[in-house]
Image (cartoon, rainbow, N blue to C red; front, top):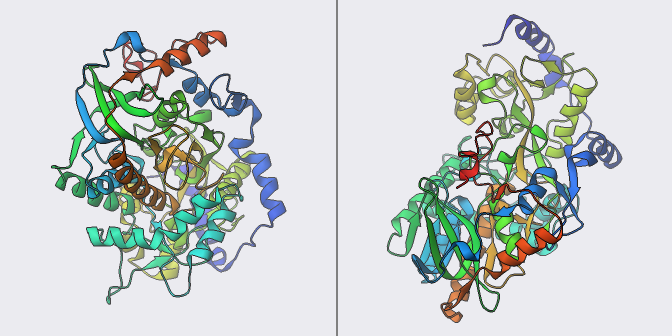
Length: 541
């Protein structure tokens, strides 16, 4: 329910709706895109980044908040734990219970591996669950992986690693078939043909969706499949990995684990380790709200970096253009791009459609920030934003479309008395996706032997901007890649005998030599919502 002032401003949108539906904003030129990004995108604010002082990416820049945890004090070192006291032993250790972690666990078990899956919350408490709009795949007669490649590579500002983008798009149809065979309930026509729609930056309708519960439906299916494989996949929840363990040769050989409820330390030994811990939205870079789940605190980047793996594009984040800007209870909550795919347009305080709704996410986010900068935003007591004119959808497609195609959005705003079928909604960019991450090859292998990384914790797949629907695709494709690679690798690897944390001790020495005195424990594990209470902040012992 809007207050009187917002109600009056919303009337301006309603008055101009018919004309705005007919109006088609001109696509920006390459030069115009470069300008709006340079002047408005958060990644281009130098004061919000600093040089990394230690580790494989020494001398490169990263967000201030990320630099702090990359250089942070390890939660424990070799003197704090007995590595001879093994609590868990597995062929493959998977760290993270989201879409990539569960996909990896399933595929590794399919190859005969004994799998241990550990997650600091519960299986499914992940950004995968939060994804709404859909998953891309070029599986229609008028499309091709080659066309998908051009869209993804170009949409990522040509910064993506070619072999990773190639793998992403060419494995996409197989990933969709795999999910469908597992039981994912994709939207389909009466004859069984999958419904596909456009996403921002795409040249073809290749977005496969499950209404606007796509991530939740995919995660439900993957979680159930993992639980159904209980003989091969042991799941340990509410347990975080706080250090990667190595053997004497420098190979990844397990992890130090910590129970999130008790703080109890456990040791897991494995032949292959897969990091699939997701993103970093709960770091709240530059104080942005976030669409991310509670556990998204860049843990995987810290674990891999401290083990010696190099990062790629760690200075690139995606701010989804349409996070909820009102009411306060859902500030930052994702308003799926599918809303714009169905016809809703972005409208400023003057009632003007100022940009094409399906420009790439970074461009549309920058456009909203610009409108607010120049005084064309709508201010509330807690935030600022522009209108997303959702009633356009049913004006274009007919009554009932919103309830049928985006029921989650209808319900999310309906709880607060806002009927998106009749009223526009306020949106502002929300911290959404970690474009950068650990550097990997097409089989998810890092520079550290026997250490794989999949999903949002990996970098290079999307370059420096991600297209809608490629994240769900990423976690499934590269989760599967990691699982299959681990399933091949473990057969030729002997179970490590001597375990060590020497690399952590070396890291602490490097911290000291660099004059880093910050005692904040790393990885972060939990967001900083504890109002400075050191007993609660990140579970400090």
